[in-house]
Image 1 (cartoon, rainbow, N blue to C red):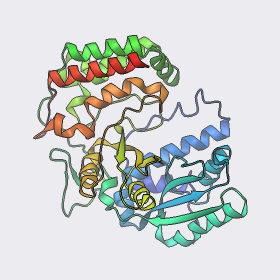
Image 2: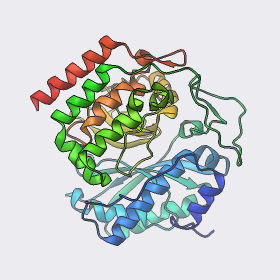
Image 3: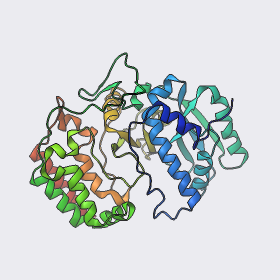
Length: 375
């Protein structure tokens, strides 16, 4: 069976199944120093990654296998990372949808959605990477997580209850997003205080975001007020939906949430690593000296509701970790993200309503101000 290429048949297949989000990819590679060809490759990767993840529930119906491939490289592995990454993206039929962070500079964790009909041929491509000297070995682990955790399709997911519908099948013609019926809690002066603090203490990060988006710093602040606060009109606020527009610089869909999973040490460290790596939407993962595992998830808020519930059933300790210092330009994320974090659903989301308690917001702002002061 012939391979599907990333830029041609895979895009047509994805488009034929469903498109649930709009993507702004114009800024991929901007300011990164990438050459034109490399920037185009990365842009294609992020576009396909986002679309594949959102259409995956339908992909499983046509025979895609969610697969983790643990890749081992030569020391120092980081020096060959970019070359290996681009080789992986260039594989015939590349279905790479997530790239894990190297562990000890020798391990790379990748996630793939592979058509079962070409599974063996696809895996054989990694033998070719060994022959080329790009990697030294690899291990294939097929994920057992249910396919529905990859989809935010309203025909299978009930946005109003945060639960999956039974016996639902995606329509190829109707794509009506279900919104929260109840009115959101109005924002107050605490929210404006957050923005003021951000402008004062995170000007560098705002400038970085301005460069990435092609906007001025004032335009970025205006965008935050316009799309997150709704200019004082709660009906215009993004909080009336289940997601917030984080104005990410073209890398991910605007309704994507970034959180960190923290799995405390338990049992066999290697087995714990594999269990965490198998969780849907994990895109970066590393292991501490104590054997605990940390993983970043980039996932639609609608999907994370179910994912985090399932994570709780397998005994992992879920926390929202402040990623300041890991992703430099996005300091303002840490506060706005905390306000609407799926990791805080028990606090902020009750009975189909977003509930923001002023005392909780004040504590959040005060803690962030103290953190920035320490830095």
